[in-house]
Length: 407
Image 1 (spheres, helix red, strand yellow):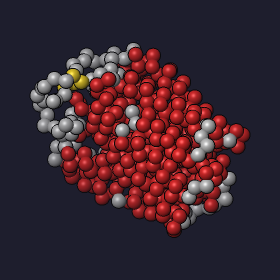
Image 2 (cartoon, helix red, strand yellow):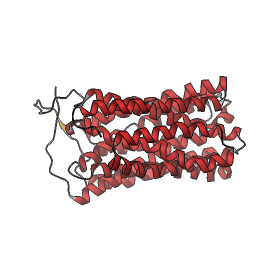
Image 3 (cartoon, one colour):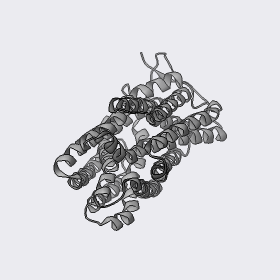
Image 4 (cartoon, rainbow, N blue to C red):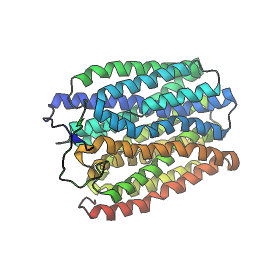
């Protein structure tokens, strides 16, 4: 059976803004939660007597189920509407973090992280598709850039808030606070989504023909989409691996565990600035040039973390964050260039599945390397992995030229 998009009139400007605000709020919360996990890892390692490999597996529990449920979330969003799925998923993640404040054993910790990851799976594909559809006629890249920036605000504020709260209250109340904030975000966003037409079901189960030659995912340039997804996979693996084990590198250099949240906040402040900077670079010089520059800077910047003393790292983290997070904004905005507008939701689901899967695979591998060779050596390996994306970007350029999209 084939699916076709329901014919909709162009949404009014105020509905576009409501869609962007609601999507931005969900992105703020879920990205903040995902990266806020790194702050808790040293405390969980001490509380439950974990090795670094086991610490990496904890991150995989969250990221793995998040990646696995990306594609189902895209299909269910088409059927039931983004509004219902986003609200339900956010409530699930929020409740799981409230319960984390009471966890007493590793199995319960693992189970709650997996439940939270399932809830978080709906956010990226459905929010991105909802916003891309609302701004299909004009301003799509800017809207998606704003949406991505909202996630960076969460990435900055959650670790910073944890760094302030951990020495005063401990990790359990901070986890509960993160969960309560999610309940507030879900309840606050629901009225805004109800006033939009872009958050409802978008497909009907009828047979139709389409003028574009696509597969079930709606991809019109399979080779370019595959290369773009590969770049996203490597970029996500590098980023998640660094965020997970940067606190342990800093602790080895003499930083107090509760202060690692401030270091992560500096990294994400630079990332937020990098989203805007890379968006401007992509518009001015093209997507390929931007990817090559940012990934090259990422590779060099990660290596320098092992060389600089602690004070130098603090100054370097915002610069590294700009390169580390800037690439993802360019990649996300480029997905729709290779996809039929009728299949944006499921295509984003496929793309985010691959990207988030990398975030699930990277931490345990990094943990195993760190247990055997040391944290610093595992960080060096990440810098080499980042460099792999440069030739991939050049390959994407050649593949994009075939359908006139190469920049």
